[in-house]
Amino acid sequence: MKSNQRKISVLLVTLLILTVFVSACSPAAPEPSPAPEPGDPAGELPEAADDPAEAEVIPADGKVADIQSAGKIVLGTAADYPPYEFIAEIDGNLEVVGFDIDIAREIAKDLGVELEIRDMDFDGLLAALVAGNIDFIVAGMVPTEERKQSVDFSIPYYSAEQRFLVRADEAGELNTIESLAGKRIGAQISTVQEEIAKEQITDPAELRFLSRINDLVLDLKSDRIDGIVLVGPVAASYANADPQLEMSAISFGQEDGVAIAIAQGNEDLVDAINATLTRLMDADLINQFIADATALADEQQVQ
Image 1 (cartoon, rainbow, N blue to C red):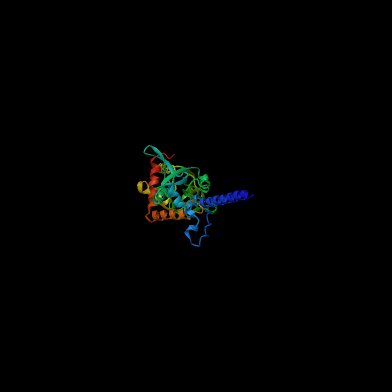
Image 2 (image 1 turned 90 degrees about the vertical axis):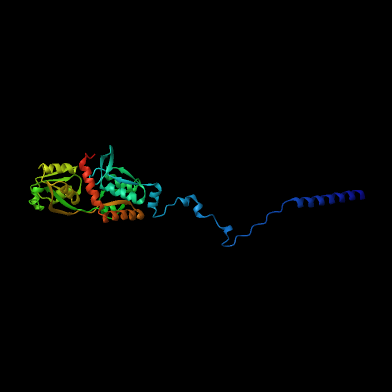
């Protein structure tokens, strides 16, 4: 009996020693970390800039930055309206040119980007702008109240006086609108000048509307028409270049100004475009662009 008790005691002591040994060799359980104190950097979340979704957000006034990042600005125009915009052969290549295009190039230059030109039907321009397929429209567009409902406009950049080009020997006779009754009147088709001829000249003998100004000038010089309704700078450039021609004293008044269309909500781009237009107008460069574009249109067949 005692022998068995002694064996049991030895076994219990052995188990106790093993338990102590195992406990000493096991790693201590980690203590919970204390809650971070306010302002402790170790307790702050990662910065929002590390979130890719945040990195893609464009500021509300970031259209210019977006254009500069792309390296180009996309122009929408309708190249069938010389001298505003038309297609001409330059150094063997067909290009969209005109004084509107010259203005657009100046805008691109001031932004430090390339100009990409997309030629499309005039009646599709506003839809393309609203859809974001183009960045701006320069196409002799009048900012009507209806158009202002869907897009924004720059300041007007072209609002010239409407004049009348005649043969020099008839300038003294054709010097009032009333004197044009019974006369053969020419104007460029699909322009404000066509509307002026229809609305302001009473009882003309003939109204002739052609797509090219140089064809109208040829008709005038060959006595097939008696005069041409033209924007003042264009009429003046023809008169200055040809002693057979003269700008009559007739004035049809000032046309409504044309402007550049921009998608709504891009005030920074509107401001940038306005800055370029102001620079060009202050330097009287737009009138020069008009004269150069008119001369180019008359030098070659407009496509």
